[in-house]
Amino acid sequence: MAEASNASVGSGCEEKGREGSSPEPVSPDTTISRVKLLDTTVDTFLQKLVAAGSYQRFTDCYKRFYQLQPEMTQRIYDKFITQLQTSIREEISEIKAEGNLEAVLTALDTIVEEGKDRKEPAWRPSGIPEKDLRSTVVPYLLQQRDALRRRVQKQEAENRQLAEAVLAGRRQVEELQLQGQARWQAWQVSALALPSGTCSPAAAERKTDRERSDVGDTLGPLLKMDSCAGEAQSRWPKHQPAINTC
Image (cartoon, rainbow, N blue to C red; front, side):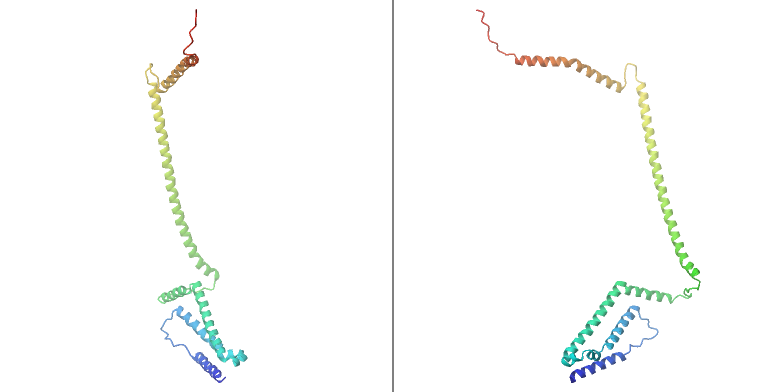
């Protein structure tokens, strides 16, 4: 019991020492990054949280268990404080990762440093909402208008190129049609210019087809008769028996 009380007193002294400890002084000219400031804030919060949940208060809540198992109570308290600090740090790390806080805070530090070199006064609201809204919205709308104009001009240029390509294709088709008509007319003139005793190639081809059909009509029955005679001869016996006249 005496050892437990001494441990509780010692822990109380440590907690008092933590509460009384103050952060190291920082010169006013030194600029602390917001990321380090956030980490320092988290550490300070954890220190104050541990100080608020001191071992003395923990044993006051579990007096019976502390009287029976003082060493076990001390181990439980230490493990509880360790896990509490670890879980809080993990939660803060997840929040920083989800919100990309380190990059955002670093960018904010850069903006602040760049703003120190500006001599003109920063923007302040005038007190007239219409005027403030107009001063903010009008530049954005003008920027969007210029972007739309550039897009329209680009689209119009593309449309002109497409129209020129279509017209060129139409002219090419018309030229091909004129060439075809000229060749057709030239062929007709050459056909009319042939001598009277000759005929055009198309007429000669038609005449040849008619002659072929006439020859087929003439030779068809003869070939049929020849085939019939051949069949009859094949059926007639080649060696007939001799007739005895005696």
